[in-house]
Length: 609
Image 1 (cartoon, rainbow, N blue to C red):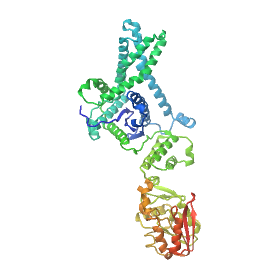
Image 2 (cartoon, rainbow, N blue to C red; image 1 turned 30 degrees about the horizontal axis):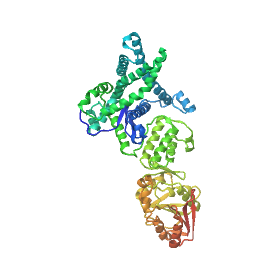
Image 3 (cartoon, rainbow, N blue to C red; image 1 turned 90 degrees about the vertical axis):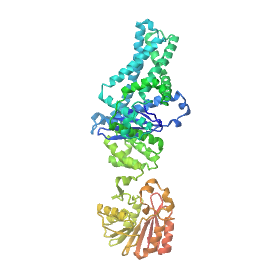
Image 4 (tube, helix red, strand yellow; image 1 turned 180 degrees about the horizontal axis):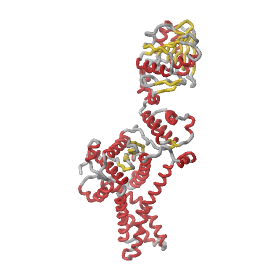
């Protein structure tokens, strides 16, 4: 066996059609769905160093790890079944009835029943039956002795080992379980490949051993061996008490005491496994050998696709240790709407993303109003997948409306991408004021038009009852391409001109509008990530105090506005009064007034000439 150059705490287990890997900070499960595509789910867990101090003490930590592994392992197993097993596109009448009346899915019930049944079978196989058969032998052969004798305990332990071996051999009959053992092999090979110091590629993983020191099979074997000694102590203590004298009562008490001693067995087994895994010395090989022999049965050589799943899960689990900001991921499966929304909002909050985006995504993908999201319903796998596709793109920081490629503004649909700013609801106030000020026969110029939201919306609204001419300019040809497309989509009659404000514009206008860049240069770096990293800085940076463009407009506006005309400008919070001062000083305007937005912020400045 090759020498390991680096150790990892990452361990895992095979699940249905996939592999789960668990690191200190996270648990990642990669599963192939019924279409053969890999799906990944990753959830954060409490790392050992953040657990309560008493939970990290030797032996106690073994019990904590055992219970945690049992619970998380069962959850990942059940979650994998929801992905790997195909469900009907149309839910059955039973599923639909349960969804409508109880707001739960058949899968939820099956998961609970399977968990309870699994624990019950384990108790019967490894506690009840060995105890029962040994008691029968003890009655038939008095030489064996009672529950406190050495032979009694060795026979009982032997029964457990035989039942475990027969159980494994029985599972080999089923093709689906043999496939699970292949995924088990992929899990071991991937971890070993990393610990050898090799790059995690399919070819390198293929060469790695499928035997691993921290395997669950080895742990179970140790549990079975250690239980012989621990349960011997339990039997001896029971024998010392004399029990009740009633056979059935003695049997039940013995079974109950062994259940109570099970955490002790797990704790000791965990510490032994931990010690054995820290060395590759040949001196401890005899102690490892029985576990390796068991692993020969519970692992099989995986194919390339299985290895890909294991690598994917390992890399995500490791990433969650290395990067505290590594996002969680969720399988696309049938689920409750409230749970899906809660998960998205929690993830968005951790990334500093507005929680309302989760509601927008669910509303748009389910084609229901946001007000209806409070009503519980089951989200189908297909619906969940479409929601998660958008959710994961939004988690990168890319603005939601760039992800969708369109944004609603003033009742119209606008194409948006990284070439233009996303139109904001506050700007609708500017449109409303502009439409109200226009008369039939008037002309309008929209400066810094961007995606054309203001110009197109005004042209469409004005065309309903008046005839106006609308011209829009922008310094960016890329932005103008988007604006022209939006005018075509909304059938708006707008003339677009590439110009740096008024440069290249001809004529005079009754109305001049603008939503120019007004963010102070020093504040750009502190803007939210989705604005700072994705929206064009050219459309944001307004200079040192954010008012450069207003000064430039004021300097030349008299050449382009008719007598009696009006200029309507959007501005940032706290800028309105200084803009009015600029226009009064530089442009000698006749009057100026401010319009506040719904939040009470001075948002729009109206200037008359």
